[in-house]
Image (cartoon, rainbow over all chains, first blue to last red; front, side, top):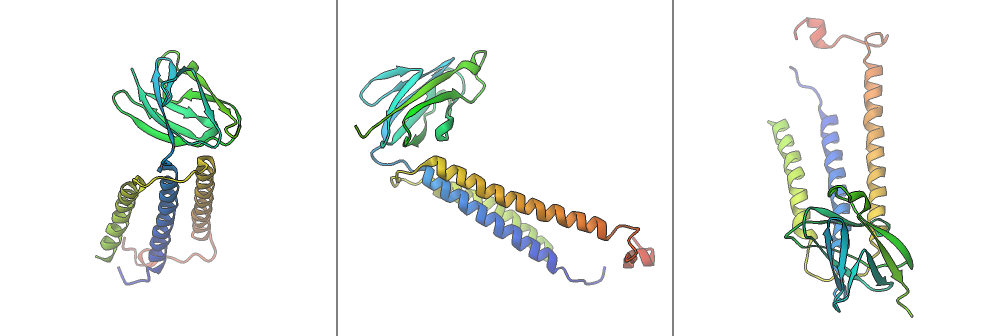
Length: 143
Length: 87
């Protein structure tokens, strides 16, 4: 095989590497912003079990199937499970974290909009998985 | 040799980027109040823009390649291998 120019291949490799680096750095930056929890975030312990969610606030208040939070505050969810794998999801706030028995996973959010938002399980966890729902009540924190 | 170097370079970057990402993403310093919806959906739209642009360029190149080098193209000329009958 004779010598021929292969600059298109090198340009291709360069473009692919540059794109991957850019995509990686963008994703890294988004992950960095989303992962770092504000220091004053209130901890809420979230426990999933077949087939409902339990929420325990810092003051010991326990809620089942519903969660009350306030705007203007940050909340850190410590998510775990009592039985099988679940996944804690507040779709409207892009909160999604696996609930795994024997493990505590964390995710945080700071609600901005007053209203009611569905909470759901996003990991198939048995017969009533489809109805493992809850409601997030976001109240006005400025009053 | 050069192509093996290139291949390893690509593989190294494929491996290194996720590891660096993993190592630096979860730091200890406290974060700012951010709207994760905005960050995550913006990232999604940017990634989709990249994906569709790359998809269009790659598929466009393949379509051009197939059309340009079809056998019935009047401009088609045999490659050196075809001319010599050596494969």
